[in-house]
Amino acid sequence: MKRRSFLESTALAAAALGAGGLVHAASRRRPNVIVIMTDDQGYGDFALLGNPVLRTPHMDALANGGVLFTDFHVTPVCTPSRSELMTGNACLHNQASAVTAGRTIIRRDMPTMAELLKGGGYATGLFGKWHLGHAYPDRPMDRGFDKAVWFKGWGLQSEIEFDNDYVQPRYLDDLVEKRSPLYCTDLWFQQAMQWMRAQAGAGQPFFAYIPTNTPHMPLWPPPGYEHLYAGQQPNVAAFFQMIANLDDNIGRMDQWLKDAGLFDDTILVFTGDNGGTVGRNLFNAGLRDSKASHYEGGHRTPCFMRWPAGGLPAGRRVDTPTQVQDVLPTLLELCEVPARGARFDGRSLVPLVKDGTFEDRILIVQYGQRQRPVKYDAAVIWQQWRLQKGNELYDLKADRAQTRDVAAQHPDIAARLRAHYDAWWAKLEPVFDDPVPMLLGVPGHDPVLLTSIDWWEVDCDNINFVSNGTGGPRGGEWHVDVRTAGRYQVELRRWPFHTGKALGSEGPRQTINGRPLTQPVTRMPAHSVVLAVDGAEQAVEVTPESLGGTLTVQLSSGRHRLQGWLRGRDGADLCGAYYAQFTRM
Image (cartoon, rainbow, N blue to C red; front, side, top):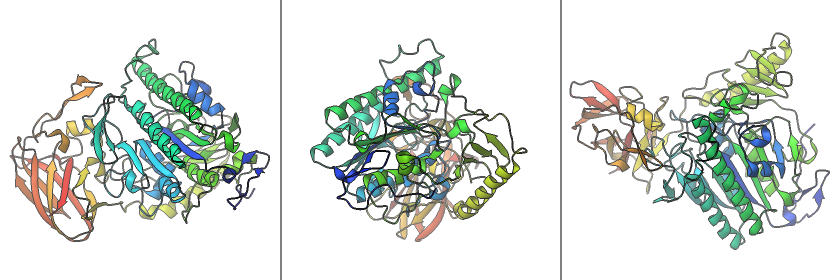
């Protein structure tokens, strides 16, 4: 059936709509919006979805108090899912298609959820994980957030945070570095509630985005939860303890919303960023495979959506396939915020929730992994059918675990889904080899830090990679766009700038919740540091005791390829310079 408009166009209409009973948002004050995205919590990591051990009472209550989308799809890893949530577009379309390898930045011509809601009169705040850019103009405050309590990279043990911890974490309050005595998840929710309280007190509708870095590894549960799940395998117990803390925070936030009189008129969306991880060792809800896979267990996650005053029906289960790109157009329609010319691959779910009317469609799940996207390395979803790898077909009604390939029995369905995918791929492929460049020379935004997460087509984004000297003897290239031509001072280092560690040292000491951690280290006896600009090399002598090597280079405006690495006394290349700071002179 053709999609029908749900909300009336006038801001003064006050009638209840249709059989679904949804209330026109403009009949009252504009609803607040909270979006929670947890990290690495798979489909089976919820009690209401059948986990036989894990207890998630507050998440269950959230799901039962609104609409539960049971066939909801993200991508198999985190950055692509976050980019799809923020833009309403497929990650291969918005170009933030991988967790590393220079593919973590959203196209700058695509507005984000925060930018669109802010343009519609909302105060906007982020509390937790961003992972869509760490330098101007790709930080959360550059992409529409009025308030950002956040950290850089994929987590508190990413290559850029490095010596951070889950207890007493170092974080950024907008651009001011701070440290908290709280466990990280407690901090994100505490800061979000404080900010929401201030907005509500000012009569300002708000959008709060709370993307947690838990229960992603490392498995560092908060103090006070050690007694939970003691009979389970240690990793599973620690993972479930982190989820228990998440669940407690959701419970505290829900109680605060009730006490503040905000519960009924707040839209709350909850989902995860990829399929199962540690918890799947105990229960995976019958799904095949896990995080990083394009089989169902890699990208299927539940989505809960609650709005009591808006008439979202409590206890409604929607089994139609849906995807994370649908969240943004859905929220815009519910909040009556114009898209301002933005186009979405996703579709508003309002008609589906209202009365079940929804245009039949085919969905595609694909991400870039750690290199250029590979054709047919995808899941194509239509009703109960799943086309995998371009030639495997599964019927999930009959075979939830995807154990029986039925492509030979249904060649017409396989051909239809493959043809749809081929057309989709042909449309998007032209941008796959065109990186979103880092910007240098923007007035007021010096210095610019580039790290190994920005290396094009090289996977190097965590402390283990940096400590072990991973990434090859020269590391990878940074793709940059120089906005102001001139001389630049470039400092290249082996270890993060904030650690103050020498090139040839063992690096910073790691801790787990305040306890020392021995981290294997490959020492690099550097005697020179090399910088290449579009292939032309220059070098500066150093010693292993040097913090880094500093060079100056003339850069013309426009696009350039930059690369830095360490070289030994014998002239052998040792490893890439994992960190580089560029300052216009």
